[in-house]
Image (cartoon, rainbow, N blue to C red; front, side, top):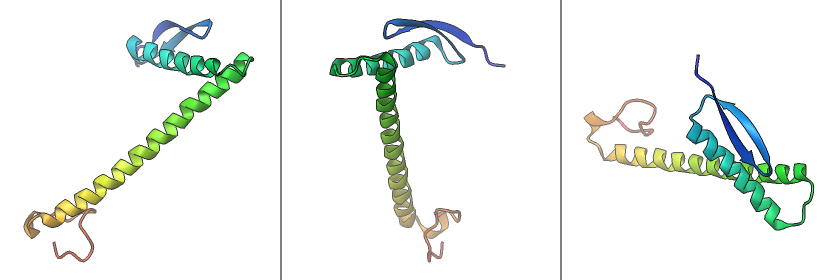
Amino acid sequence: MTKRTVVRVRIGSDEYALRSDRSEEHTRAVAAYVDQALKDVQSMGAVVETHKQAILAALAIADELFAARQGAGDVAGRLQSLTVGLERLLPPGKRPSGAFAPEGDAG
């Protein structure tokens, strides 16, 4: 069983006691990130209701997550292409015979 810690943080004008199995530093960093996203929304000035500010901050964070996932997928695809290209440069006896072997290669 993992040890859970309780960390007190402030997000916006409210204080929260967060239970987490992550380190205190990690929990504080995540809370600070959410707090900053909320402040960014508040600095736009148009929205008054706190719950709407929180939703807009969550949408901004989710947008960042989606962009990061897309970027990671793009990097993985480029690495796969580079791997196949590099494998073609290897002598036939050193080429892997697994899933990354190029089609039509006598390996």
